[in-house]
Length: 156
Image (cartoon, rainbow, N blue to C red; front, side, top):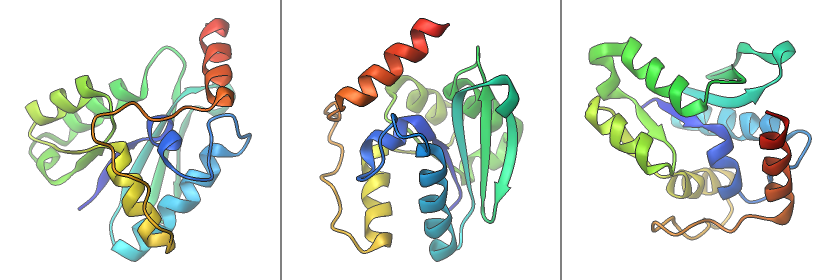
């Protein structure tokens, strides 16, 4: 089953990666590559707030990373991608903990998976013990992550 992943939504759920890390996106891509290879699936991951010099898509094995330009959210890009797929959307699973996007995905007949649950699957692939699954609670967010997002929103 292939996946569409909101990268910045997933990162806070993955042990060892934080949004404040300079290489957070690359670290997640490497982890997704391992998962996709072992599960024999494809993954498209979306990172929003990309600087103009970094927008576009890049393929890393079975993982395609979309660096979404500022002014468009990863959620919007994921929904747009699902709509492009038309009938094929039902074969893809969207990974996010944003309830609004998950409801919209279900309306498009796509499957959904919370970021916490998917992070647990990633941890099992790495051979680590899985973090507690997302049960609708807000994830613990480090002060570094809060500072990073405050900085991102103040720039816009």
